[in-house]
Length: 401
Image (cartoon, rainbow, N blue to C red; front, side, top):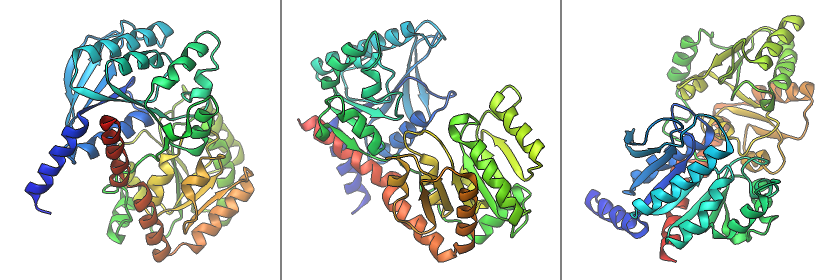
Protein backbone atom coordinates (compact mmCIF):
# COMPACT_ATOMS: atom_id res chain seq x y z
CA UNK A 1 0.00 0.00 0.00
CA UNK A 2 1.37 3.44 -0.88
CA UNK A 3 2.17 6.01 1.81
CA UNK A 4 -0.59 8.35 0.59
CA UNK A 5 -3.18 5.58 0.70
CA UNK A 6 -2.01 4.55 4.16
CA UNK A 7 -2.32 8.12 5.43
CA UNK A 8 -5.78 8.47 3.91
CA UNK A 9 -6.87 5.19 5.48
CA UNK A 10 -5.55 6.19 8.88
CA UNK A 11 -7.26 9.57 8.71
CA UNK A 12 -10.54 7.87 7.83
CA UNK A 13 -10.14 5.47 10.76
CA UNK A 14 -9.40 8.34 13.13
CA UNK A 15 -12.45 10.25 11.99
CA UNK A 16 -14.56 7.13 12.55
CA UNK A 17 -13.88 7.02 16.29
CA UNK A 18 -13.04 10.66 16.99
CA UNK A 19 -10.39 11.95 19.35
CA UNK A 20 -9.29 9.63 22.16
CA UNK A 21 -8.65 10.93 25.67
CA UNK A 22 -6.39 8.86 27.91
CA UNK A 23 -7.42 9.61 31.50
CA UNK A 24 -4.62 9.02 34.01
CA UNK A 25 -4.60 10.25 37.60
CA UNK A 26 -0.81 10.01 37.80
CA UNK A 27 1.52 11.28 35.11
CA UNK A 28 5.27 11.80 34.67
CA UNK A 29 7.44 12.70 36.46
CA UNK A 30 5.47 10.31 38.71
CA UNK A 31 5.61 6.92 37.02
CA UNK A 32 3.62 3.71 37.31
CA UNK A 33 2.82 0.73 35.14
CA UNK A 34 -0.55 2.14 34.04
CA UNK A 35 0.83 5.42 32.71
CA UNK A 36 3.74 3.71 30.96
CA UNK A 37 1.27 1.46 29.14
CA UNK A 38 -0.99 4.41 28.32
CA UNK A 39 1.90 6.32 26.75
CA UNK A 40 2.98 3.27 24.74
CA UNK A 41 -0.55 2.72 23.46
CA UNK A 42 -0.98 6.40 22.64
CA UNK A 43 2.23 6.43 20.62
CA UNK A 44 1.16 3.34 18.70
CA UNK A 45 -2.25 4.85 17.93
CA UNK A 46 -0.65 8.06 16.69
CA UNK A 47 1.28 6.07 14.09
CA UNK A 48 -2.13 5.02 12.75
CA UNK A 49 -3.34 8.60 12.41
CA UNK A 50 -5.44 8.62 15.58
CA UNK A 51 -5.79 11.82 17.59
CA UNK A 52 -4.74 11.04 21.17
CA UNK A 53 -4.44 13.34 24.19
CA UNK A 54 -3.99 12.91 27.95
CA UNK A 55 -5.91 14.26 30.93
CA UNK A 56 -4.09 14.07 34.27
CA UNK A 57 -4.41 15.34 37.82
CA UNK A 58 -2.10 18.17 38.88
CA UNK A 59 -2.61 18.17 42.65
CA UNK A 60 -2.10 21.65 44.08
CA UNK A 61 -0.48 22.85 40.86
CA UNK A 62 -2.27 25.08 38.34
CA UNK A 63 -4.38 24.04 35.38
CA UNK A 64 -2.28 23.70 32.26
CA UNK A 65 -2.73 22.85 28.60
CA UNK A 66 0.70 21.45 27.80
CA UNK A 67 2.65 19.12 25.55
CA UNK A 68 4.27 15.87 26.61
CA UNK A 69 6.32 14.12 23.96
CA UNK A 70 3.96 14.07 20.94
CA UNK A 71 0.73 14.47 22.95
CA UNK A 72 -1.50 17.30 24.08
CA UNK A 73 -1.57 17.08 27.87
CA UNK A 74 -4.31 18.64 29.96
CA UNK A 75 -3.43 18.88 33.64
CA UNK A 76 -6.18 19.87 36.05
CA UNK A 77 -5.83 21.20 39.58
CA UNK A 78 -7.40 19.27 42.46
CA UNK A 79 -6.15 21.75 45.09
CA UNK A 80 -4.12 19.40 47.28
CA UNK A 81 -1.09 17.16 47.00
CA UNK A 82 -2.47 14.75 49.61
CA UNK A 83 -3.86 11.43 48.36
CA UNK A 84 -7.22 12.08 50.02
CA UNK A 85 -10.77 11.06 49.16
CA UNK A 86 -11.61 14.73 48.69
CA UNK A 87 -8.91 15.04 46.05
CA UNK A 88 -10.28 11.99 44.22
CA UNK A 89 -13.79 13.48 44.25
CA UNK A 90 -12.51 16.80 42.92
CA UNK A 91 -10.63 14.87 40.21
CA UNK A 92 -13.89 13.17 39.23
CA UNK A 93 -15.64 16.54 38.95
CA UNK A 94 -12.78 17.90 36.83
CA UNK A 95 -13.20 14.98 34.42
CA UNK A 96 -16.88 15.81 33.93
CA UNK A 97 -16.16 19.52 33.47
CA UNK A 98 -13.47 18.65 30.94
CA UNK A 99 -15.94 16.54 28.96
CA UNK A 100 -18.38 19.45 28.84
CA UNK A 101 -15.68 21.83 27.62
CA UNK A 102 -14.10 19.48 25.05
CA UNK A 103 -16.78 17.74 22.98
CA UNK A 104 -14.30 16.48 20.37
CA UNK A 105 -13.15 13.67 22.69
CA UNK A 106 -15.59 10.86 22.03
CA UNK A 107 -13.68 8.08 23.80
CA UNK A 108 -12.60 8.45 27.44
CA UNK A 109 -10.11 5.66 28.15
CA UNK A 110 -9.41 5.38 31.89
CA UNK A 111 -6.09 3.70 32.68
CA UNK A 112 -7.08 2.45 36.14
CA UNK A 113 -9.61 4.06 38.49
CA UNK A 114 -9.49 4.68 42.22
CA UNK A 115 -13.24 4.42 42.78
CA UNK A 116 -14.73 7.94 42.65
CA UNK A 117 -14.14 8.13 38.89
CA UNK A 118 -16.94 5.58 38.51
CA UNK A 119 -19.35 8.31 39.63
CA UNK A 120 -18.56 10.17 36.41
CA UNK A 121 -19.54 7.27 34.16
CA UNK A 122 -23.34 7.86 34.07
CA UNK A 123 -22.75 11.53 33.26
CA UNK A 124 -20.24 10.75 30.52
CA UNK A 125 -22.66 8.23 29.05
CA UNK A 126 -25.46 10.83 29.11
CA UNK A 127 -23.12 13.24 27.31
CA UNK A 128 -22.62 10.67 24.55
CA UNK A 129 -19.06 9.75 25.47
CA UNK A 130 -17.82 6.17 25.21
CA UNK A 131 -15.95 5.00 28.28
CA UNK A 132 -13.34 2.29 28.74
CA UNK A 133 -11.93 1.35 32.14
CA UNK A 134 -8.71 -0.62 32.35
CA UNK A 135 -8.38 -2.95 35.34
CA UNK A 136 -4.75 -3.19 36.41
CA UNK A 137 -4.37 -4.77 39.86
CA UNK A 138 -6.43 -7.31 41.78
CA UNK A 139 -7.62 -6.10 45.19
CA UNK A 140 -6.98 -2.51 44.11
CA UNK A 141 -8.92 -1.22 41.09
CA UNK A 142 -11.03 -4.25 40.17
CA UNK A 143 -14.85 -3.86 40.42
CA UNK A 144 -15.17 -6.55 43.10
CA UNK A 145 -12.85 -4.64 45.42
CA UNK A 146 -14.27 -1.20 44.64
CA UNK A 147 -17.88 -2.23 45.18
CA UNK A 148 -16.99 -3.83 48.51
CA UNK A 149 -15.90 -0.53 50.04
CA UNK A 150 -17.84 0.30 53.17
CA UNK A 151 -19.05 3.82 52.42
CA UNK A 152 -19.20 4.10 48.63
CA UNK A 153 -19.38 0.49 47.47
CA UNK A 154 -23.11 0.42 46.69
CA UNK A 155 -22.91 3.67 44.76
CA UNK A 156 -19.95 2.38 42.74
CA UNK A 157 -21.87 -0.80 41.95
CA UNK A 158 -24.76 1.28 40.58
CA UNK A 159 -22.35 3.01 38.19
CA UNK A 160 -20.67 -0.12 36.79
CA UNK A 161 -23.29 -0.53 34.06
CA UNK A 162 -22.54 2.90 32.61
CA UNK A 163 -19.04 1.84 31.56
CA UNK A 164 -19.10 0.69 27.93
CA UNK A 165 -16.14 -1.71 28.15
CA UNK A 166 -13.72 -2.96 30.75
CA UNK A 167 -10.20 -4.06 29.83
CA UNK A 168 -8.81 -6.83 32.03
CA UNK A 169 -5.09 -7.46 31.71
CA UNK A 170 -5.39 -10.93 33.24
CA UNK A 171 -8.00 -13.69 33.54
CA UNK A 172 -8.07 -13.01 37.29
CA UNK A 173 -9.21 -9.43 36.77
CA UNK A 174 -11.88 -10.49 34.27
CA UNK A 175 -13.24 -13.05 36.71
CA UNK A 176 -13.38 -10.46 39.49
CA UNK A 177 -15.28 -8.00 37.28
CA UNK A 178 -17.82 -10.63 36.26
CA UNK A 179 -18.27 -11.72 39.88
CA UNK A 180 -20.12 -8.47 40.64
CA UNK A 181 -22.44 -8.64 37.66
CA UNK A 182 -20.47 -7.13 34.79
CA UNK A 183 -21.47 -9.07 31.67
CA UNK A 184 -18.57 -11.19 30.34
CA UNK A 185 -18.95 -9.73 26.84
CA UNK A 186 -18.27 -6.26 28.25
CA UNK A 187 -14.92 -7.33 29.72
CA UNK A 188 -12.17 -7.77 27.14
CA UNK A 189 -9.01 -9.68 28.00
CA UNK A 190 -6.16 -7.60 26.56
CA UNK A 191 -2.53 -7.98 27.62
CA UNK A 192 -0.15 -5.13 28.23
CA UNK A 193 1.99 -4.40 25.20
CA UNK A 194 5.74 -4.18 24.65
CA UNK A 195 7.75 -1.90 22.39
CA UNK A 196 9.43 -4.55 20.27
CA UNK A 197 11.72 -1.98 18.66
CA UNK A 198 13.38 -1.71 22.10
CA UNK A 199 12.88 -5.21 23.51
CA UNK A 200 14.24 -7.71 21.00
CA UNK A 201 16.77 -10.52 20.69
CA UNK A 202 20.14 -8.72 20.64
CA UNK A 203 23.08 -9.41 18.37
CA UNK A 204 26.35 -10.67 19.95
CA UNK A 205 27.99 -7.25 19.67
CA UNK A 206 25.04 -5.67 21.51
CA UNK A 207 25.39 -8.25 24.29
CA UNK A 208 29.11 -7.53 24.61
CA UNK A 209 28.52 -3.76 24.71
CA UNK A 210 25.85 -4.10 27.41
CA UNK A 211 28.12 -6.28 29.55
CA UNK A 212 31.01 -3.84 29.21
CA UNK A 213 28.74 -1.02 30.35
CA UNK A 214 27.92 -3.01 33.50
CA UNK A 215 31.48 -4.30 33.96
CA UNK A 216 30.35 -7.93 33.64
CA UNK A 217 32.77 -10.38 31.96
CA UNK A 218 31.73 -12.69 29.13
CA UNK A 219 30.62 -16.13 30.24
CA UNK A 220 29.28 -14.99 33.60
CA UNK A 221 25.64 -16.03 34.14
CA UNK A 222 23.52 -12.91 34.67
CA UNK A 223 20.06 -12.95 36.20
CA UNK A 224 17.80 -9.91 36.44
CA UNK A 225 14.48 -8.81 37.83
CA UNK A 226 12.55 -5.55 37.51
CA UNK A 227 10.35 -3.67 39.96
CA UNK A 228 10.33 -1.48 43.04
CA UNK A 229 12.18 -2.84 46.05
CA UNK A 230 9.18 -3.89 48.14
CA UNK A 231 7.91 -7.05 49.80
CA UNK A 232 5.24 -7.59 47.14
CA UNK A 233 7.95 -8.18 44.54
CA UNK A 234 9.33 -11.21 46.39
CA UNK A 235 12.97 -10.17 46.35
CA UNK A 236 13.48 -11.98 49.66
CA UNK A 237 12.58 -15.24 47.89
CA UNK A 238 14.75 -14.41 44.89
CA UNK A 239 17.83 -13.56 46.94
CA UNK A 240 17.39 -16.78 48.94
CA UNK A 241 17.26 -18.69 45.65
CA UNK A 242 20.29 -16.79 44.37
CA UNK A 243 22.29 -18.02 47.36
CA UNK A 244 21.79 -21.58 46.06
CA UNK A 245 22.67 -20.54 42.51
CA UNK A 246 25.93 -19.00 43.72
CA UNK A 247 26.95 -22.32 45.27
CA UNK A 248 27.07 -23.83 41.78
CA UNK A 249 28.04 -20.66 39.93
CA UNK A 250 30.03 -18.42 42.31
CA UNK A 251 30.52 -15.92 39.50
CA UNK A 252 26.76 -15.41 38.92
CA UNK A 253 25.36 -11.88 39.05
CA UNK A 254 21.84 -10.77 40.00
CA UNK A 255 20.64 -7.35 38.83
CA UNK A 256 17.65 -5.85 40.68
CA UNK A 257 16.33 -2.94 38.63
CA UNK A 258 13.86 -0.60 40.27
CA UNK A 259 13.41 2.25 42.76
CA UNK A 260 13.62 1.91 46.52
CA UNK A 261 17.27 0.86 46.81
CA UNK A 262 18.14 3.20 49.68
CA UNK A 263 18.45 3.21 53.45
CA UNK A 264 15.09 4.95 53.85
CA UNK A 265 13.39 1.77 52.64
CA UNK A 266 13.08 -0.76 55.53
CA UNK A 267 12.67 -3.68 53.13
CA UNK A 268 15.90 -2.76 51.31
CA UNK A 269 17.71 -2.53 54.65
CA UNK A 270 16.32 -5.94 55.60
CA UNK A 271 17.56 -7.48 52.35
CA UNK A 272 21.02 -5.96 52.77
CA UNK A 273 21.28 -7.33 56.31
CA UNK A 274 20.16 -10.78 55.14
CA UNK A 275 22.83 -10.84 52.42
CA UNK A 276 25.48 -9.66 54.87
CA UNK A 277 24.54 -12.30 57.45
CA UNK A 278 24.50 -15.09 54.84
CA UNK A 279 27.56 -13.91 52.93
CA UNK A 280 25.64 -13.62 49.66
CA UNK A 281 27.53 -11.70 47.00
CA UNK A 282 26.91 -10.81 43.38
CA UNK A 283 23.66 -8.88 43.94
CA UNK A 284 23.49 -5.40 42.42
CA UNK A 285 20.66 -2.97 43.12
CA UNK A 286 20.62 -0.65 40.10
CA UNK A 287 17.74 1.62 41.15
CA UNK A 288 15.32 3.24 38.74
CA UNK A 289 16.69 3.12 35.20
CA UNK A 290 15.51 4.53 31.89
CA UNK A 291 17.70 2.11 29.91
CA UNK A 292 16.20 -1.20 31.04
CA UNK A 293 16.04 -2.46 27.45
CA UNK A 294 19.80 -1.91 27.15
CA UNK A 295 20.53 -3.61 30.48
CA UNK A 296 18.54 -6.71 29.52
CA UNK A 297 20.91 -7.30 26.61
CA UNK A 298 23.54 -8.27 29.18
CA UNK A 299 21.20 -10.76 30.88
CA UNK A 300 20.74 -14.52 30.44
CA UNK A 301 17.71 -15.19 32.63
CA UNK A 302 14.83 -13.13 34.00
CA UNK A 303 13.58 -14.21 37.44
CA UNK A 304 10.11 -13.26 38.67
CA UNK A 305 9.07 -13.98 42.27
CA UNK A 306 6.35 -11.38 42.77
CA UNK A 307 3.53 -12.17 45.20
CA UNK A 308 0.92 -9.94 43.55
CA UNK A 309 0.60 -8.27 40.16
CA UNK A 310 -2.12 -7.15 37.80
CA UNK A 311 -0.16 -8.45 34.83
CA UNK A 312 3.62 -8.82 34.75
CA UNK A 313 4.83 -6.62 31.90
CA UNK A 314 8.46 -7.21 32.83
CA UNK A 315 8.01 -10.92 32.04
CA UNK A 316 6.85 -10.03 28.54
CA UNK A 317 9.71 -7.58 28.01
CA UNK A 318 12.18 -10.27 29.02
CA UNK A 319 10.64 -12.85 26.68
CA UNK A 320 10.69 -10.38 23.78
CA UNK A 321 14.40 -9.89 24.53
CA UNK A 322 14.92 -13.65 24.25
CA UNK A 323 15.86 -14.21 27.89
CA UNK A 324 15.14 -17.46 29.64
CA UNK A 325 12.30 -16.78 32.07
CA UNK A 326 11.66 -18.41 35.47
CA UNK A 327 8.40 -17.34 37.11
CA UNK A 328 6.81 -18.10 40.46
CA UNK A 329 3.13 -18.55 39.71
CA UNK A 330 0.48 -15.95 40.48
CA UNK A 331 -2.80 -17.78 39.79
CA UNK A 332 -4.72 -16.66 36.69
CA UNK A 333 -1.98 -14.20 35.75
CA UNK A 334 1.53 -15.48 35.09
CA UNK A 335 0.60 -18.85 33.61
CA UNK A 336 -1.49 -17.07 30.97
CA UNK A 337 1.49 -14.87 30.07
CA UNK A 338 4.17 -17.57 29.98
CA UNK A 339 2.07 -20.21 28.24
CA UNK A 340 3.89 -23.04 26.48
CA UNK A 341 7.02 -21.30 25.22
CA UNK A 342 10.64 -22.43 24.94
CA UNK A 343 12.96 -21.35 27.77
CA UNK A 344 10.03 -20.09 29.87
CA UNK A 345 8.59 -21.88 32.91
CA UNK A 346 5.84 -20.84 35.31
CA UNK A 347 6.25 -22.88 38.49
CA UNK A 348 3.66 -23.27 41.26
CA UNK A 349 6.43 -23.66 43.84
CA UNK A 350 7.49 -20.75 46.03
CA UNK A 351 10.37 -22.66 47.55
CA UNK A 352 13.63 -20.76 46.89
CA UNK A 353 15.68 -23.97 46.61
CA UNK A 354 13.38 -25.38 43.91
CA UNK A 355 13.34 -22.04 42.11
CA UNK A 356 17.14 -21.97 42.09
CA UNK A 357 17.21 -25.44 40.47
CA UNK A 358 14.77 -24.24 37.83
CA UNK A 359 16.95 -21.23 37.05
CA UNK A 360 20.06 -23.37 36.73
CA UNK A 361 18.21 -25.80 34.46
CA UNK A 362 17.00 -22.99 32.18
CA UNK A 363 20.47 -21.47 32.00
CA UNK A 364 21.96 -24.84 31.02
CA UNK A 365 19.41 -25.65 28.29
CA UNK A 366 19.20 -22.21 26.66
CA UNK A 367 20.42 -22.06 23.04
CA UNK A 368 20.45 -19.32 20.39
CA UNK A 369 17.65 -21.12 18.55
CA UNK A 370 15.42 -21.44 21.63
CA UNK A 371 16.03 -17.79 22.54
CA UNK A 372 15.00 -16.70 19.04
CA UNK A 373 11.86 -18.86 19.16
CA UNK A 374 10.86 -17.39 22.53
CA UNK A 375 11.41 -13.81 21.35
CA UNK A 376 9.34 -14.33 18.19
CA UNK A 377 6.50 -16.01 20.07
CA UNK A 378 6.31 -13.17 22.59
CA UNK A 379 6.51 -10.52 19.87
CA UNK A 380 3.55 -12.03 18.05
CA UNK A 381 1.40 -12.11 21.19
CA UNK A 382 2.47 -8.98 23.04
CA UNK A 383 3.98 -6.57 20.51
CA UNK A 384 2.50 -3.07 20.69
CA UNK A 385 1.33 -3.38 17.09
CA UNK A 386 -0.90 -6.35 17.92
CA UNK A 387 -2.27 -4.64 21.04
CA UNK A 388 -2.89 -1.46 19.04
CA UNK A 389 -4.97 -3.42 16.53
CA UNK A 390 -7.23 -4.60 19.35
CA UNK A 391 -7.77 -1.15 20.80
CA UNK A 392 -8.30 0.58 17.47
CA UNK A 393 -10.98 -1.96 16.58
CA UNK A 394 -12.61 -1.43 20.00
CA UNK A 395 -12.73 2.36 19.61
CA UNK A 396 -14.30 2.03 16.17
CA UNK A 397 -16.86 -0.50 17.44
CA UNK A 398 -17.93 1.71 20.35
CA UNK A 399 -18.31 4.80 18.22
CA UNK A 400 -20.41 2.97 15.64
CA UNK A 401 -22.84 1.87 18.35
